[in-house]
Length: 194
Image 1 (cartoon, rainbow, N blue to C red):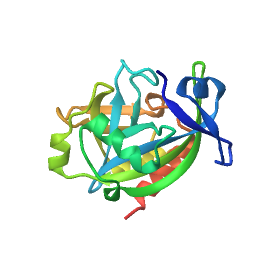
Image 2 (cartoon, rainbow, N blue to C red):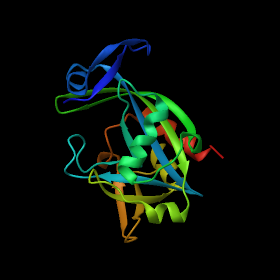
Image 3 (cartoon, helix red, strand yellow):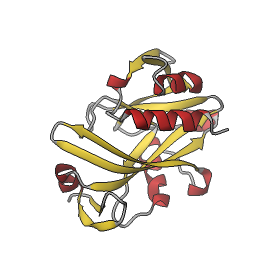
């Protein structure tokens, strides 16, 4: 059975409920949740598995997913548990922003109101992460490097695989097809949040 999501007008007023598949086919606005793990002056990103349905093998924020029609943003912690195996209370998260974002991939038109949060993680948290099959690996990235990448001061960015510490260099073409505004906003908000 297909996931049911709330559908919104562009002004974020509730329009109704529909299946995730139809929402992506028709380009309807819907809500998603993202959480970016932080640790001192570093952030964590994920490389999506090549087995996922959408955006196969691309770099993305640490955790992300759709909010179902019967969920509120508090339920986004479900995604953290599903994707990373960590149980955290919503009160542990810090609100970063909500961004409207439009992406197109193949025949999918993805219009999202993205609720973005951060979670400060310890070394113990990181070592206990057991990501699910949707995630190929996690990258640890210096925040200043990521900020310069986001604001177009650098064409690429390097990170280190959490387990092997292998250095990986990526560009925006390796990322989900977020807009320049998305990168500018999250880069600045992450960098200046302290």
